[in-house]
Length: 318
Image (cartoon, rainbow, N blue to C red; front, side, top):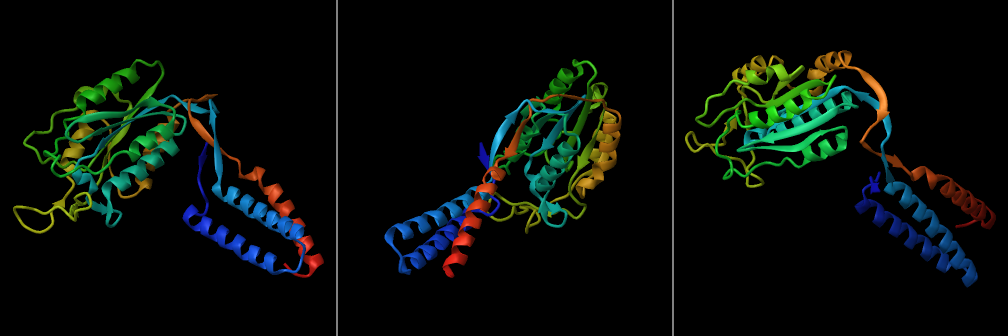
């Protein structure tokens, strides 16, 4: 069970409290019996409580929901080095914010597929193995945070190769599956390593794209709340510029598209092609879905409001 308040609780709680306190003062000042005052206060408290519950938007979990399943395995490989927080996506937003939004868009478009996530900086890490539970993968995306500049040892794009091969081999063993890869990076290499060939993975991949983030002008990078990273050689704030040549080399090696991402719609044509080449069927998914329960309280609230309106009309006052 989870809650997703419509109005934030830090606003709703004071509003409800002040409303009840105001009504309580009015009731106490009215010249009626004690029992009548108690009943009126209780009715309003019940109304406000129902409003609070509806706003709280309590949602219950549902397991093994019948959904349209696709024969697609989608592997996200995300560069999480410090340059991916450079602020030049859609204006001055961090690149990683664009990555998270765009990957959410991809998962929604390819719903019913299996998704997996690898992130890499100094080392690669499988954050989520292949699963139909897209929420689990979305939660894994949310754990990716900006690394400390002291932790960063220079960027190389070779790091995730072994983990990618492991995941792609596991997908290839499933009969009738389509394996899609989205390799996500700005292409910047700041270490002494040369970009190695990823062509050994091509025969394990059926489609996908290298998604490039960044601009030729570059963007400045935050230092985990300590301002922006400075360039020790040139002075001033350091700028990270995407390297399209490296990204295109990766796409050629893996025989997949290269797309420079400026907005989610840039990948739409590829998603349409992937869906058109897939097979769908109705089946039981291991997705966890959430069902609203607020509508259970609405009839009671309406009934209580109707009673209170009738009583106010009869009294001619609150």
